[in-house]
Length: 532
Image (cartoon, rainbow, N blue to C red; front, side):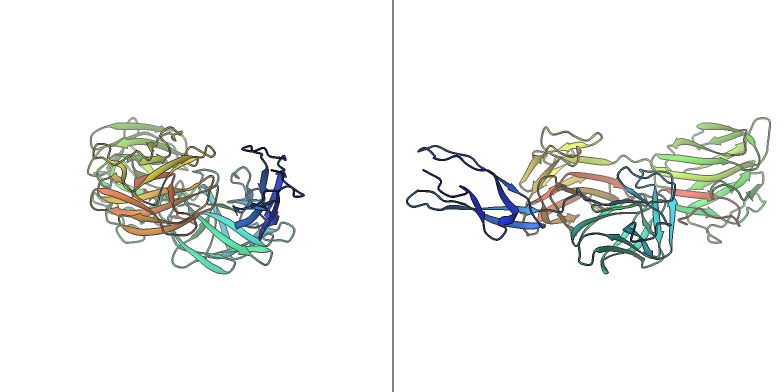
């Protein structure tokens, strides 16, 4: 058979311009023989694109020979703009542009804050994107872009405090309301169409909360964390002193018990909110009511004006840790406490001096192992600290986790991190994990490095919690708060229609949703550590 066209293979149809023949076939083609040609797909816009491949020939009944080709265009990431929100001198993530409260919009820079009262904070812990942020009660950030459709990713949160009712407006339309729990860093992805040459993001507070961002990019992220309490008024000099908390109201479960010697409080007026002030005692006990378990307990001890030595800290079970502080500065020490009833810390004088000892802060953090699962094939790489889950991982009482129902498959795309490159997929399947009854923070990673997936239904404990769409090459992170009452956490993934017939999962993490308690101990007139 001879190919008679010129060119031998041509592209026709609605989206013909998005396809091109980069290698033409040879002719003639022998009986039972074959030839090859190559077609390149270069979409001009996002979405499904179709065309017809046509080959004119001298065959009696199949001239021309036509067939349809199609491809899905996605927003290219090569032109991504990435912004790391923080202070004027906090670290900036590689590949990102710094944004601080002083970054105002101008035509020359093409991005910046256009309205609102903005502040910034650097908490000093977490990654470069997590540790710092900009905050506002109502502010708008603008970026000049070409008209088109964009994938916009936000990171929202604060590594020190929780925030709620944060309104997200894109191009003047409210697209989300975000709450972040203590210890939670959320990533939100949105599809936005720009028609006026400028993308606008407005953050607005809806209730008594703070707006925080840590970074923004055209595929981006944020965060949060820590409840704080202050022992506010000066301690009365008596054997049974009970300071009030939060300006006069005693907080349930938080108590300061002094021994036979008197207590005091001081505010030195210099240093951070945690360093500048303290409570002092020759022999006193702080009690914090907590659930049974193992805790990491962190103390801040010291005085910005005077040196102190001969410190002693002991737990109820009589384990002791000593600190010697001979300088006028704050020191940290961490130990572990296994008392099943409460985290009681006794701080008293010992050695050659029997002076008042200054206590700045006490942190009590649950130390509970997380359950982490990496979904993939039976031989794809597994992320460190995660358990492998493949299509063959069926639930059993002995293993305590696995697929409980559904037809499940797996794929390894071979690109991306250990968690991103592979996944399990199903039209309708349920994964189960045995856990103790309680409330959990459940983190999911959903996506596929090669193909888009839409209308993926997420059901936790029998209730639909989300519907997720992902673009090709996009893996999204979602975090949910889930209460378990039957000893088993169930995650159902179900395709809810759309262009793709499967829901996919890359990773699952389950950890108790217990917040970190921080007691900021100081003089009644001093400043309490907080979001501002």
